[in-house]
Length: 97
Image (cartoon, rainbow, N blue to C red):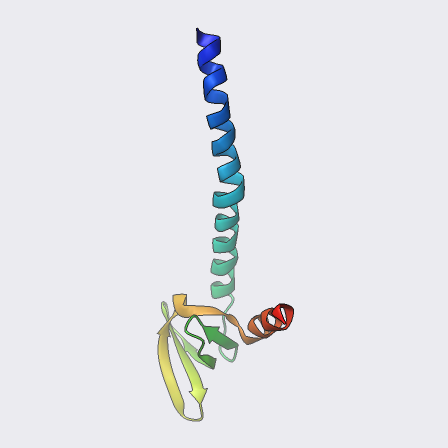
């Protein structure tokens, strides 16, 4: 009876293992890369927000970024609202076309 129980559980264990490898692990890797990117931000970097706003970083605070989006126009956004650098966004657009 114990052998049948183990044989019955084996497919579920495999399924959970595949789910971890295909879903959870890649998400953890992307989150780690995002945190590293946010920690490397510095004044003068050209970035894109998740809303598509392009600007240059003028000041960094703990959880805020001051973006200059035009001459003498600065907005304050959450650091988590930064999607990436403008170079990364432009290379993704080129790859898609």
